Amino acid sequence: MAVVGVLALQGSFNEHIAALRRLGVKGVEIRKPEQLRTVTSLIIPGGESTTMAKLAEYHNLFPALREFVKLGKPVWGTCAGLIFLANKAIGQKTGGQDLVGGLDCTVHRNFFGSQIQSFEAELSVPQLASQEGGPETFRGVFIRAPAILEAGPEVQVLADYPVSSDRLLSFDSPTGDKTENAEEESKVIVAVRQGNILGTAFHPELTADTRWHSYFVKMSTEAGEEATLSSLVPAQV
Ligand code: GLN
Image (cartoon, rainbow, N blue to C red; front, top):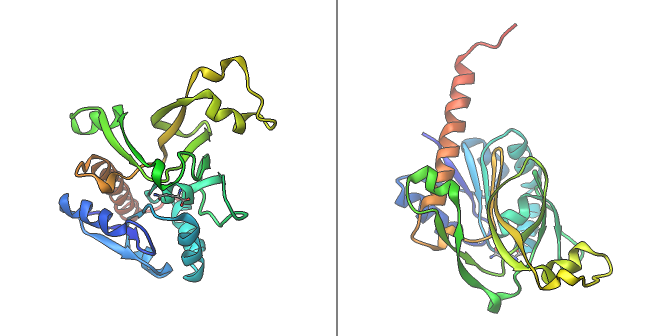
C-alpha cells in the first residue's frame, strides 16, 4: 500500500489529505526532510510559492525534496506546487525564489492574474476518462493560477486552456511586438506529466471530484510495487 505524503508547510494541504481520505488513503503531513523517507510519493499543495519556498528553506527541505524527485518517486504539484516543480519560473515580483525543479517547463507564476481574476473552467482531460471510464471533462478551480508557457519534449500535456495569442506575445517576443495574428486563439498548458512528476495549475483538492487524486494514488501504488519488487530481486552481477 502506497504511503502518500503531503507537504504541510502552507496552503491547501488539509484539503489534499481530506481528498485522499475520501479514497481511503491516509495522507501523511511532511514538514521535515527525514519524514520524506517514510513516504512513497508526495503532493506539494497550492498556496503561495514564495512563502512556501521561505518555509522550505527554513526547514532545510530543498535538498531532500530534490533528491526525492531525482529518485523517481511520484510527486504531484498543484498550483504553487506546480511552480515549485518547474525548472524555470517567470513573472516573479521580487527577484525569484528557490525551486525544487525536475519538470522541464517554464511556468508563469501568476499568468491568470490576481485573486479577483480567479475562475472555474471545464477542461478536457482524456487521460482521466481512460483511467476511470468517466467523463473526460474536469472542472478546474484556478486561483491566482500559474500556466505553463513552454514544455520540453518529455513532458506529456494532459490539459490546456485557450487564451488569446495577444496574451502570449509579450512572453514570445522580447519587444512585445503585436503581429497580425494577435486576435487568434492560442493555448497555455495547465496539466502535465513527465514520468514521476504530475503538475496541475488548478486545485482538484478544492472540488468533490477525486479523479486526479485517484490518478496520483495509482502512480504511487505502481511506484511502491516497483520498489518492493526491486528489493526482492537480487541485483545482477
Ligand atoms: N500564483 C501563486 C504563487 O505564485 C500560486 C497560487 C495558488 O497556489 N493558488 O504562488
